[in-house]
Length: 94
Image 1 (cartoon, rainbow, N blue to C red):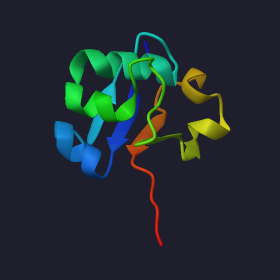
Image 2 (image 1 turned 30 degrees about the vertical axis):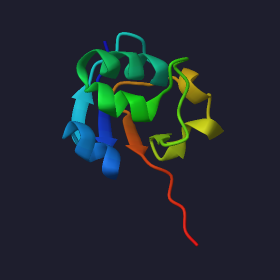
Image 3 (image 1 turned 90 degrees about the horizontal axis):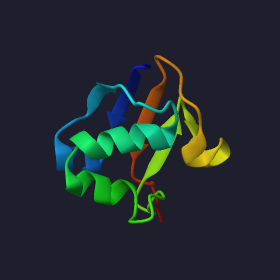
């Protein structure tokens, strides 16, 4: 089993109170990580991360080792032991 370092920033960090944790997903992908988090994190946090079809919502951006998952393989992006996964809301300005 792998261990992934998870960091959560912005308003979504305040929902669950967890900002930096280690998670051991059963499946070594971003989707597997989210499924593990769904079992243990608050429902409010998960509602901001993915929708009822288990796709990422518009309220969240996910990075694996500084690369946005939408530039990788999305939720099927593989994870390795020690990877850093960052969750934050999109930053917009005007």
